[in-house]
Every structure is written in structure tokens, then in C-alpha cells.
Image (cartoon, rainbow, N blue to C red):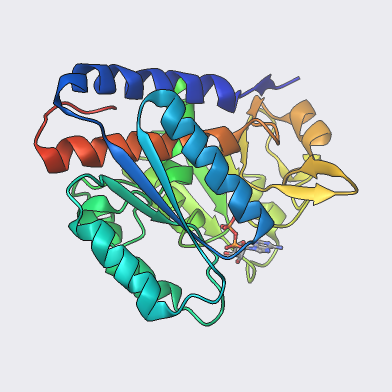
Length: 286
Ligand code: ADP
């Protein structure tokens, strides 16, 4: 049986690093994360609550701006402008998806790059691509922290990423590349996906398809990271058929309890990193 990569344990370790930095600067003021939620998408509302709760548990100010579904794009941009200009706000996150009458690109590009905790602003995407320090998107950054925590070496390994979204797949592939993996990216148009996945030493699956990856698709001894999260017949499952995969893999993330907690923990890390940098308080979390 594969080793279970416990996202909650890694998240705890990241939380401790965040708390250490917050203790160090406690005399100077509090750092603040501002989350913007538009409408009443139930999953989004629960993600936002989780983010706010974690922020406050760690000693960050967590503020939620909940706007109605009917908010106009100029109104939303106006709020972002105010948060950009507010010296007390260290990180700004706009929960996606946004309603169809609002252009996500316009909104993402309006966030001040130095407060962009998701790392989605094109300036930060470009900096990351060029290897200039910026914060990386939370999910792939959390996965890299997990590989590090469990002593899984990446350099020289063949990493296969299934999915090429801007949020997960693309930045994941870049992070693995910068950690000296040989990287293959698969997507919807990939022919014979299994031929690629079977050659992965590290397999990261972020396709949004329940049970896409079966035991047979995995190289014996591989490390398998499942980013998917789905409710199927009342149970939560991922993009990987866990029981089969766990018999073949060396290590695997469960769903839930794998990648999910890491994403939120990394959001806290990014908020504190950006806050320390912007305020000139020195130090870093990682
Ligand atoms: P996420 O936010 O988890 O990255 P998205 O739905 O934004 O999910 O993106 C899904 C990605 O997965 C896309 O890049 C798509 O090409 C890829 N994908 C979807 N279905 C398959 C499939 N059957 N095989 C390989 N890749 C797939």
C-alpha cells in the first residue's frame, strides 16, 4: 500500500511557519487578507468561509466583501481599487467563478500585483515564468510544499501533469520544471493519455474528471497527486480511482484531506509573504 500524503499535516507545518512570522512582527501591526465573493454559489461561499476562518485562526485579519450577484463590473472594480489603495490590506483574492456578466480577466488584471495572493495577475504569471520571485498560485505551490515535506525529490524525475488550466495545470508544470523535473503536460486533446501517465514518476492530475486515472494508468512506485474534488453519489472523490491507485503507487494524496487543505494554507503563506514584502518588515515564510 502506498504512503498516504496527508495534506492536513503539511498544512499544519505551513501554518506554524506563518504563525512564527506573525509573532515576529506582532508589535508592528496586523496583516490583512481581503476576500471578495460575488453571488451565492454554494461551493464558493464555503471556500470563502474556510479561508476567512483559517486566516483568523492564524492571527491574520480576514475580511470578506460579499457582493450580490447583480453587482456591476464597474462596482466590483471600484471595490478592488479601494482595496488596492488601502494600506491595511496585504492580500486581495477574488473568488472565482464570477457571474457571466463580469469579465474575469478584467477583474484579475485590476488587482494590484503586489497584493495578488493568487498569483493570477499577468505580471506575476510572467515573473514566475521568468524565474523572478513572485508568489505562485496556491494549489501548485501547496503541492510543491507537500513534496518537499515528504522528502520526495523532483530533480531529474519525469513529472506528468494532466490538465493545463491557468489555475493549476500550467503553473504546476512550470514549478516542476523550475525544480528540475522533466515535464510532460497532458490535456483534453492528448491521444492515449495512459501512455504518458504510465511513464510518470510524479503524476499530478487536475482534469476535473472523476476517476479519470485508474490503477493501470500508473507506473508502479510513482507518486500520485490528485487535485480533483467531486461529489459522486454522496461521497467525495477525486480524479484518481484511489483504491486501485494506492495499490500501485509509492505515495498518494487522498481526497478529501490531500491537496485541499494545502491550497488554503498556501493562501495564508502568500498573504504573509506579500505583506512582509510590501511593508518592508523583512523575513519570509518559506
Ligand atoms: P482545474 O481548475 O482543476 O485545473 P479545469 O476544468 O479548469 O480544472 O481544467 C481541466 C483541464 O483538464 C483542462 O486543461 C483539460 O484539457 C484537462 N482535461 C479534461 N478532461 C481531460 C481528459 N479526459 N484527459 C486529459 N485531460 C483532460
